[in-house]
Image (cartoon, rainbow, N blue to C red; front, side, top):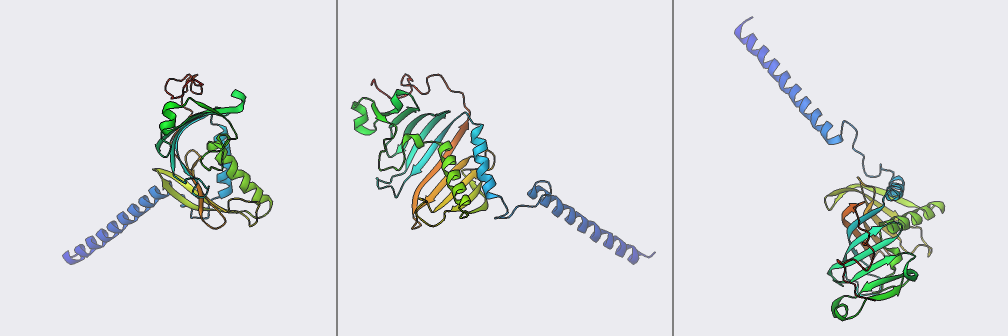
Length: 263
């Protein structure tokens, strides 16, 4: 074999080697992106109703949590200001809330379902809270033009409300539910699910967008729109801690960390 033939042979071998390396690199890259070679699900390929039902199962195994709740009700008729609230919750229904930023900073609420004649305790915010003793109010009391009471607080009530409306619409053969895919919310991957309610007055909310945490199967965000397409209310849960250790006085007026005064 002559020199030129050897050179052509080496060139061919080099081309084949490079091509093989490229193929291996591409295959390896695709493996890493798809998690072991599985195809990446496209928007609409997820079972949206199954994801919603998984929230109930996940919440059922939860005993307590703490979180920072950001909420607003632009169409409630109140001042419409967003509120940021630190929340402690323990089953069956014990809740402590403290407003920590912007509207109503310093306000506190403590409610244990079935105790204190089913009333809750509130420490007012602002100047009133500096002088007024703790207020005791019935649990069906609504403040600031809100559509909800202290009985409606928490992740569990959000899950319950979303599922109730979805299953009702499904029973009436009017459920329109779709998973738009996976999005990132506050550093966490979540399924973005959109639900459209049937027409008619039986459904107060006509469209809901929900973000469900992929890891915990619990809701992270909810945006609710009225019949005119305007944002009616929204809720976002951040810095969620599941099943944290809680002291015996976490839901009593005796807790020195709270600002409640003698009733």
